[in-house]
Image (cartoon, rainbow, N blue to C red):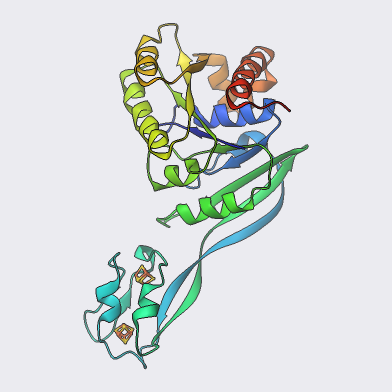
Length: 277
Ligand code: SF4
Ligand code: SF4
């Protein structure tokens, strides 16, 4: 069972919800926010393993290349350029589809691995923690997220998605069993919540809303939830103390009041997904 935690934008409290909920539910935490994976700052797992994530990219043997341009014409991502006296590859535009290697009749293209980041595994007590880290400057997080998801054993996983509604969010949420949409009770919050909602609707993943930084009047979100048929399963109040604890890198569940809130939220999630163990 996989639960994805999404938000339409960064800074809504998605990671706060994901790490604290994973802790009260005693389930695996998986940080798929590969461009800014900060869940480990709160969980502080003891890292046990780290593995590079590789992409296969073409390598052109210019001695064999006839500059026929077949590879250039077939590349859908404009990663190959036939200007000048040789074919040039723009590695960071390459999506590793392998088509150029297939279409080259002169066997002038071989593939070579390129490291784009890594996945890391650790433990916090008995809690399993995974995260993916994209090398700064690399444009594609999806292969790292796919590598992370491939490593997950059976059991319950809480997937902390990247913010927004990009390919990386889709790669995280696809094939999950349930999504928690974290939002704020503001007009911007509604706008961004709608982006996350559209993602899970298209993927056919059921979901529920958690309102973060609630100040008592959540009508904007409640109206949106009612219109879209998505339940609101939790409200986390705006709190200076919580903000300070987060800034210190502390888990909110270490504070009794907040632990009770997350336990209540965890129970709602259990009910909705039919989590009996
Ligand atoms: S298809 Fe092969 S031979 Fe033709 S330009 Fe590309 S690398 Fe060179
Ligand atoms: S592997 Fe695919 S994306 Fe990369 S250069 Fe070749 S055709 Fe283009």
